[in-house]
Every structure is written in structure tokens, then in C-alpha cells.
Image (cartoon, rainbow, N blue to C red; front, side):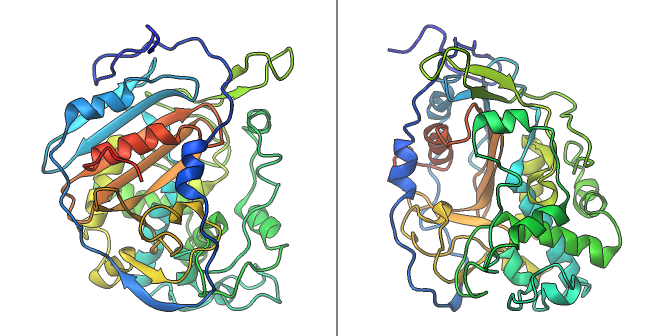
Amino acid sequence: MRSPAHVPASADQPVRRPRWTTLAASGALLVALTAGLAAPALAAGPARAAASDARGVAPLDRAALAATLADLPDATVSGALVRVTGRGGEWSGTAGEGVPADGRFRIGSISKVFTATVVLQLGAERRLDLDATVQHYLPGLLRADYPPVTVGQLLDHTSGLPGGSGLTSGDGSEQWFADHRTDGWTPAEVVASAVAQPMSFTPGTAQQYNGINTFIAGMLVEKVTGRSFAREVQTRIARPLGLHDTYVPAADDTSLPGPHAHGYLTVPGPGGADAPGVLVDVTEQSPWPWAEGGMISSAADLDRFMTALFRGRLLPPVQQAKLFTVPAVPNYRNKNCEVGPTAGHACFSMGLMTATLPNGVVVWGKTGSRPGYTSGVFATRDLSRHLVYSMNPTGIDGREFPHMWAVVTTSLGSGRSY
């Protein structure tokens, strides 16, 4: 039975926050959707071009969308906002105390789309060659025994470079993040920590989603332009598109200015493992993920950015095509690519990820997470429907996934699950 504290959410009807208790980490739905297929043999093939929508999106169901937020907040999510637009209609809603529909939030790995866009622009300007190597542009950054890694392989995550290390994630617990939320590392420190490890696979033979690729891409932007990555995003994307809420924070700026929802993590409270957890406010945190995941934006700005990107306003045709072309290689240890009919195969292009929803609709976009914040932006290729959401999970183990999945499938035409 629903608690009296839970009431349907809408754009103008806030939801009161219930009392907080710890919740056992089941993650059952996430495991069911993402576990399972062993990585296939590593072999490259021709690139897979963008698929057209298998089926048009269903008419916008505003009542069903409101229902996706009706049970929030709960012990896994303290707040949420959803914005759906497109030719078929519009809807927006919020849930939780103090969640402004026009609020800013930390967009995590959605930052990667901005980074890829800047790199592709530099490629169009012939200031970067996507087929040239990282070793050419940044000599000494990678280990001498590494094979050549191209700029394009950074963007589509086929580089084979190793992932991160404990430098930036500690023991991976909520308590560690809460204790270290204002710690920061330079891009060079993050990359150096990662490349102390051996390669994951031969470049170009598989796809492993890896933030180290984007750290290096951001370093390339600064190397070839002689200007900061933050300035390049501002002058190339944010300013031309009028994105007033979108920016790359300075390395020492832990703030989240303007209207915003607070982010919290549940950490162990006094009294041992069986005692209720305690919420810690992690709204202010280091933006150390930088070009990989440190940006701040809003739902309206992300909607405008993705609309312009899909319509070709930011890239010429040759580079635009790369946004919607997925390499025909196996997926390697990446749960994002283990959902739906293409499970086991790559699902990232040079900047975006793609998925086929239960109703057959193909969507493109990106998700992103930082402690206390998880967000996503997705659209059909023809922009008949686009979605931006931001949620405030109180953990880092993905327990908010059922809420996110309900929003995505309902917004894009189907409330069914795999």
C-alpha cells in the first residue's frame, strides 16, 4: 500500500519527502536487464549505420508519465524531474521537496557528448585528425609498450585503454564518496593512474565504455587549441545555442549555483549495520570528472543542445554521420550494451549511445551520473519525441534503475519491460 506521504507528482504539485530508512540493495531488475551475455570473440567488422525507428512512438500519455513519478520520493530517490517534448506534445513533472523544473543539475557523463562534439568540430576544421594517434598529439602520455590508439577510437570507446583505478573511487562505497566529495584530481593524474595497467584489448577490436577515453579527448582539445576545454565548450556550443545553464566548472568550484535539487547519499548511521542510514548532502562536490563527467546543465538546455545536435547545427555532414554510426565490434564488459536485441554488440557511436526499446523504437542519447545525481537525454532520430530526466539517487548501486526505466519507456512510447 502506498504511504500517505506519496502523492502523484506534477509540474506544479510537489511531493513531500517521507521518512528515510535503509533499503536492502537488491538491484534485481538492473541485474535482470543487464547481466548475462559473455563477451563474444573480439573481431572487428564494418560499421553499423544508424537504424531508422522500427516503429513510431505512441501518442504522449500524460497520465502514464505522471504515474512514473507518483511513488517518489522513496528510499532510493529523493527527487526527480522529467521533461518530454516533440511533435506529439509536451509534458514535464517533478517529484520531491525543493525540485525546481528549471533547476540545474550535475550531468555526469552526458558531458561526454559535449566533448565528442568539440572534437568532431576540430576534425571538421582539420585541426585534429580522427585517424591520427594519441601518441602523435600527446607524446609520452601513454605507456611506451601500448599500441597506437587513434583519436576516433577514443570517441567510440574502441581504444582498448584500461579503465580507472581506486584513485578516484576508493572502495566504491557511499561513505567514501561522502567523505571525499570535494577531493579533486587533474586529468593527467587520472590518466596516469589508469595507464599503469595493461591494455584491455587490441584497439579497434571491441568496445568498452571508458571515461579515460574522454579525459584524453579533453586533453587533446586543449593541446590543439591552446585554450581551456571550458572555453571551447562555451564558445563553440553554449554561447551560440544560448545555453545559459550549461558550463564546465573551474577545478576548485564545488558549488551548484542557481535553482537546483539537492543531492544526497545514504551512509551508515550510528548503531551498526541494522540501524537506519543517515542522509548526507553531497550537492557541493568536486567537478574533477571535467570533460568526462563534470559539467552542469538544465533540462531545457540539454533539450536545446540535443535538438541542435540532431539537426546538424553543430557539425557538418561527414562528422554528423559519425554521431549515428556504431562500430560493428563486440561489447566488452559494458552493461549499457547488454539490453535489448543488440545485446553483446557495441552500442556507442562517436558521442552517443543507442538502444532499441521494447516497443521497437530506436533512441539515441546519453546517460550520466554523479553521486546524488543521475540523468539522461534521449530522442528518436527524427526528433519526434525527446526526453530529459534528472533523478537524485541516494545510493551509487543503481537501485534507482526501475524508476529511470519507467520514465524512459513511458516517455518514448511503451511502458513494457524486456
